[in-house]
Figure 1 (cartoon, helix red, strand yellow):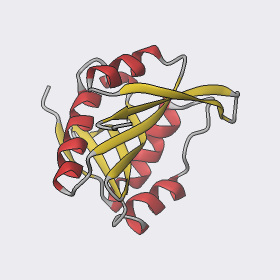
Figure 2: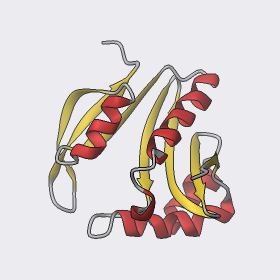
Figure 3: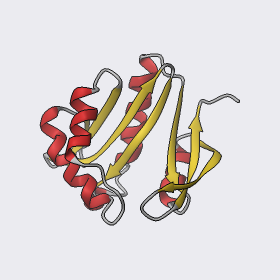
Length: 152
């Protein structure tokens, strides 16, 4: 399967929001307006990437760039395209692009019960550095705080 990774554009917002709703159904998915704000209005402080497969968006991810740190906001892959290394490719490309812009460390929060995501992030070089109790408001689940390149 050929996967193309590129920067997200305004024309992608609706499809990204639709994929968000599928991937985070029953949770607290971001709205189309939130993605528009991130991708279009805040593009100087954010980087959003999409993974294209079969002519449609199979996955996406976003990162906020704050000084020399990157805060990963979302990583999602369509259920139909999981287990094809799309998330790995998105994260690798994000790290490459933000490194070129001076980012030296990256952080994210992930549900403590999301073992597949935790394994993926560990494989990508992230390590657990703490817990945010009750981080996910819709159900009160804790979040694991993970860092890559962070020096204590």
